[in-house]
Amino acid sequence: MVELKTDTSMDAMHEAGQVVGRALTAVEKAADVGVSLLELDEVARGVLREAGASSPFLGYRPTFATTPFPAVICASVNDAIVHGIPTGYRLRDGDLVSIDCGAQLGGWAGDSAISFTVGRPCPEDVRLIETAERALAAGIEAAVVGNRIGDIAHAIGTVCRAGGYGIMDDFGGHGIGRRMHEDPPVPNEGRPGRGLALRHGMVLAIEPMLIAGGTDAYHAAPDGWTLKTNDGSRAAHVEHTVAITDQGPRVLTAR
Image (cartoon, rainbow, N blue to C red; front, side):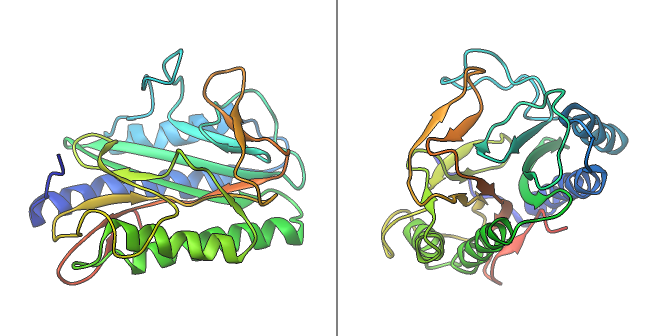
């Protein structure tokens, strides 16, 4: 069931979203050659703690997971697409890093992700990230009253495929509200004019995930969480929490 949020509820979700935005900004600023992924997780924990927010990631255990998630950020490096567990791995010059973070504040959730490079970026990684960001922008632009979920999916997929990138079939965006994951699912590829109609008060986490090698194949790492490209190519993941309103899409996690 899809819950329509009131304007007051969307304002409250904006507060949670701003905590997420501050956490991601702080993590990206701290990310440098030699810094460990665990240290980046500590940075995000500090932002959440200062805001009086909790993490919907920490301890989360969906049906596919063998263990609860142990951190407040997902830190996915190079060929890891999403759900990377922060470890003692220290960032190296040229790494491509995707950070996903959530916050629970006042009973409402926010969820957002960024991708960036550490040190000297290679042109292929820059193009990958820029395409992911354009796909996200296209998805947000399609998130208007009167459109359908398929219009968002089609907008994202069109940008990704035009760039020659692969898309994960089974993972995408989702509704969000009092819980991090709610109905409806928001695919990253689809047919326009299909799916649930968008209405004022719906709130969606829109999140393109691009595979540089152009194939859609991926696998789970031995940790049971990290999803990696089968061909070893790099990946990018970006995300915003977006409210559907009569005035147009409202990005609740805008940084």
